[in-house]
Length: 390
Length: 132
Ligand SMILES: [Zn+2]
View 1 (cartoon, rainbow over the protein chains, first blue to last red):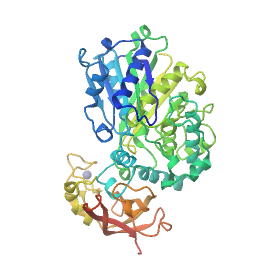
View 2 (tube, protein in one colour):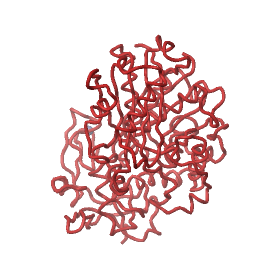
View 3 (cartoon, chains in turn orange, yellow):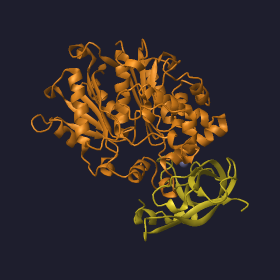
């Protein structure tokens, strides 16, 4: 296997982009990433795009072909384009497919993109599409919503470990603060613990400010073999590990409701591949689709003891400047969660940080970064580790 | 959301808490599985009707309803562990103030939801406190 590097990155603005279509935003992200890498279309060997539900959100399937076409990669170049779907982990899996294409030697220059256009439909329709990431027949048809499923994780976590609503709220407060430092973030406003606790209850104990929003956005990365990465950029960022794991589709079938075993296993595989430990990681982008999800993530990735995620967050250990900064981008909560794009956006953030280009939210001297992308309530987890030095 | 054939083919399970069990390893499955996750190819799956009693593992009160459940809001949703072992997601009827983790419950036959105005009404299993 060959070592793989990232040589170009780009996020579009995240938010309610009513004036722009899916193809508009993916082309902006793709062209931006190519420009960042100083590369042209002729050099591209393949394209992977993460997209959860084009069929539900914009009534469009065959997203791979659409994106290749409007990126100018089809008519003359006939570049192979593949859509990857794993609900909210689609982007992370698109990156993983792209890494494997380069590592295997089949391809040299590969684009990993992710995109979702969620605001073309009413929010009820969007919620229903998102609920399809859970088990429709045995969760959805009993009246389960996606926030409801995570609320049951939160309830048991509180019961068992004493985690409080205030500690959950601290996740949202921190991520809004980080988002206020990120130019592409959907929300740049600071919020308080009281704002979260006073926001409307969606699924007890989760308030609306415990939930990530509905977002339009696209992100793209350009990958190359590490041996030739310096041809394109002075600051290639290296892939040290790509790992993925599965678990039961329904929350009720899990070994433990408060642990995402798919995250635990994917992280174990990633640490082993990179020959690193949690203490070696300088910053991490985790999948905070709900505040409780970030608490579980930092525990399951090894950054906090099981049950202590809430305390660690309230202590400021996961803030910028803390022991292990989590979601410097603002996370899904404040940067936004265009589901298919999220896993790719997380990698864009880590690359930006490891290059030293993160401006006011820069983690000084960061050497190793991690991304953690989850599908559904934990049926898919993807973990990547990146480094500044090869 | 809930297509007619999709609902119809699982009606036995939904109305009567019919699941399966593996004769080889003894594990019970609800929702039913036709392939044992422990024994895989060498498993022997047979139908099994659950007693319908169990306890609450976790729960939530849903205030923003799923599509088709708007007229029931707020409603209580729970993960319930049946006494035979498997866990499922179901609504729990009763005072939301009194629900708690570990509470004993039993199954009852109720309306589950409906598909829009004049749409199909779905029936199935919900749970109530065991002493109710
Ligand atoms: Zn068996």
